[in-house]
Image 1 (cartoon, rainbow, N blue to C red):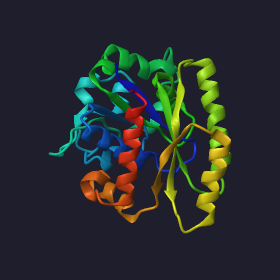
Image 2: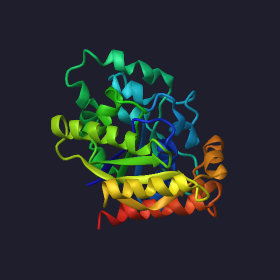
Image 3: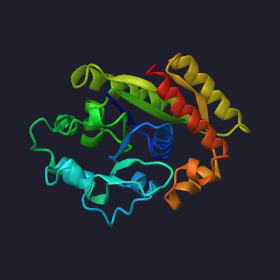
Image 4: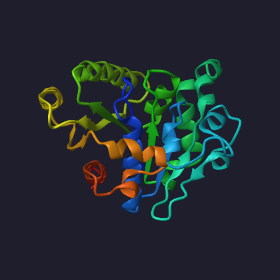
Length: 258
């Protein structure tokens, strides 16, 4: 039985997309069958995995609104080294909030799609890149997920943002998905040259305790460049320290299954 992980944080610019892309790539490299659902209307995960969102059969929006079946819209990456299935997205998804308002069980649409297509028996891991807000798309992701992975930028307001997100998490767990758990927090954009980054890690460690991954994703130009080439970091520059960190993250995720 596969595992559904929502990659989420209500704050933007914390590395959700970068984490989704590179975690998926390393899980695939470790011979896991992986599906990525791009639930952010910006479509950066789609582009970062080398898929032209303007040249696809359908998108997550089409599947979510019932205009297309999952099998008609899913794409596969074109890499020789690894294979990742992707449910792509474009800006059209930004209208989903309004269009879904009159749908029955609108918070459970994605969960129903997962069950109807038996996706947890097809894939080992399903990663959902969530938008940086609490809207119907994020609720759908968290309602169908087994766990939530929280990328957390090493910056001054990180703990405040984490506190707000954990409040949202608890609401969803209480009202919509009692089985939902926190997969963990992964620190991103860490700069060892600054005291601030070290202080943030220390504060969050004291605040959360055990729900932390030991790997810390460093601030890296190569990590930032890779998506513009449509490549995950293990195919773009696997000697980069960011590549090493994401490999450790994938190993940590897999270790939780043992």
